[in-house]
Length: 329
Image (cartoon, rainbow, N blue to C red; front, side, top):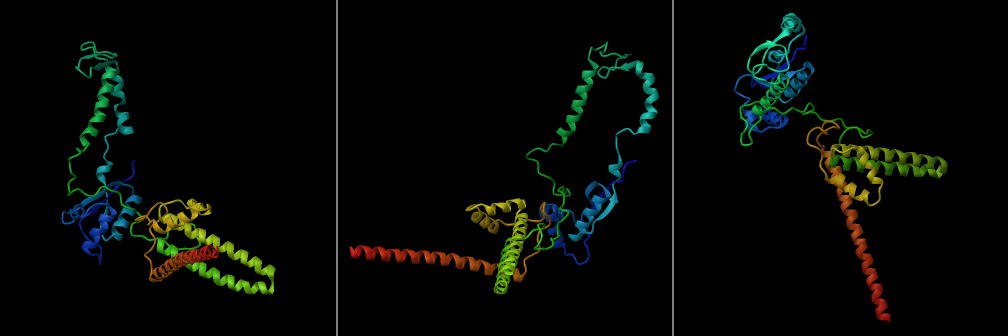
């Protein structure tokens, strides 16, 4: 007995405290469709958004749609249970008549009745080749009938056909000491600044320990450095995950010259919209994240200005030196 299949039905009803415009916008994002087609789902009566689903799949679709504000429901899909394939009972029922008629046959082309043979004695057609050709034509005919002409536009009253994102509307959990998850550009800057500031405080405290015991202080400094490196790698991997890239690309930071360019790429390339293969999108940035990220950018800009200023100062000193050499000569 085949497993019961389900369909998702929507009649335009909304979940409590859900606004119509908000639900339409959410559905357009879920189905990757435009608002014109989404508008056709409202005021038209019950519409089957998805058919032929297993119970677990139907529950998943239902949960996502309800989170988007659409009060959809799950119903048994009786049409999916219909099949033109013969069951074992039907095959057993027709087995005996088929055996009785196996000694004679009708030509599939002209209908001539004769004893079973490979060739029709009336029209001369090779029966096996004729049947194979008819089967090939029967398979290709539905495909040609359903092929849409390039200039044919889809009806705006058809329900969306795109699969919805099961993780739509969800946000990932934030965890700095993990190789899983995703963080955006600003949170990557903020966490990096906090990590460096924390390491500076720990290093200052361990410097006092070295005054008492150089061995113990050295061991603690090494342990703190390793811990900072591990956490730095973890948040870097999460930044790469947000871009949709594998975390193994972080190893490019170990390559001279390439590491500087790659770090800039990690700061510039935005994250994937919605969920990707590494999980749902990260939560929105808080005020603290924005402030810390802005402070880090100011520090970077100040460092670059200091480098340029020192470079100009060195050039000025060299210019004075050469002027003195020329005047002295």
